[in-house]
Image (cartoon, rainbow, N blue to C red; front, side, top):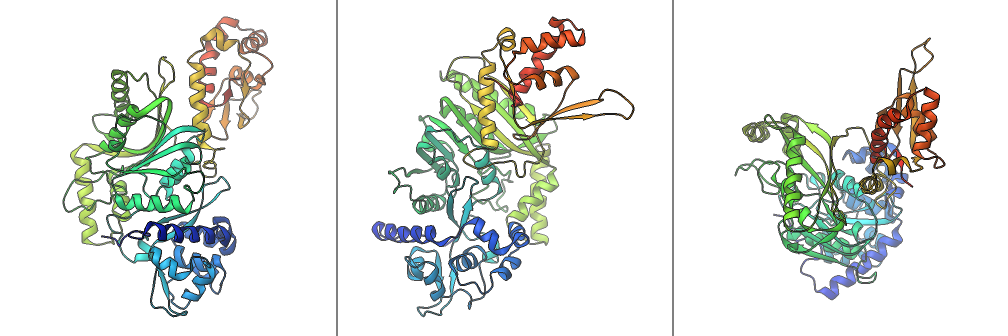
Length: 539
């Protein structure tokens, strides 16, 4: 098992003073993601993203400023004792100093001398959520710093999945927010910036200790008392009977064989068979959503020989909706997006390697255990994606979407404060809400506008007057590409907010010499779909 997390066992007053000193030093240090990227350069920064540390170490060699010292010590786990010694850390953290960092549990010192080496006892690094705010997140040391596989109680910092969830979550102000499986507290910290109160749960007391530390580093209690309500327990058990306006979760969804010889890391293994963790989260989230509330979750699901992935997840949604209705809580909207699919061998190898297993017979045995487990349930592939649930404020017919969107979103996720995928999720929910109240006559009476990120592509065969293919392409959101007829493309092109859909259809009928009624019957369902996808905007 790991050593106690930073700050554990300290007198509360002493702990508070040390963290306040650390926060002051970090805020004054200039130690930000952008500053590190500028200092080491684009190639070394890209290599660092692949966990290749040597280029960044070389780029920072000889730098004695706070950025160089803190990055070398905590991010690069600098092994050269002569580069990170007490006097250099004292200069980088003048309020906390090396003694305070050691007392807090962030570093270990070889001795009390000014030139004695210090080594990291925890991972601490700047984090850019894309919203212009500077944050720092503490977590357990990774495999590279330890030189070995991480312990099973390992607490992750900011990874790819947590960044995806952060960008996927709408950032509209809410009353109560819930982060299930909070880990080091990343999602809860972001939610605290737009929620009146935040509850965060985890089965791991170690994870909750890191979440508390990160909340203190962020100064949540110092900013009007908006600290985190941290609760230990399994998934949603600690909040039974409560309701929330926003639920976010990056749960421990990795499908893991239930065998004594297969280790289970708490950050990724929920202790269930197959994809039952995600099923439980879908059912549980539906029960705790307040009217108007939204849940955003990540998860894996099995593609089985006797059931498609879509039917499988849809069944979970139906179970959740039935349970919510039986409890008198109202209808449930659902949007499921599959982003990636791995075959069993790829899935098994990915997660065995994630655990730090080196090539050899032991690793081969673990891969075999994973393959046996998946084969035993008839699993042909494993999908990964997002589940968005929404509880309508009124009693209306719910909407459901289950789809696959595998286009790359690199550079298009936007910031955690909005402007990207989170804004798109919120816009789609709002669009579906609006569409639920519009019959065809009401829809035809609207003056729509084309979203500013929509472009049109026309593909011609040489010598032909008209295009063979017209594509409406979305620049944001899921970057959808919609094949359009000439009539639909013309309608979208005319949607500038001045003419109603009915007026545009009537004009097209005259231009194309087509009956207006037939043209409307053809185009209105397509207009609905474009509104639902965010290509057309309702006033």
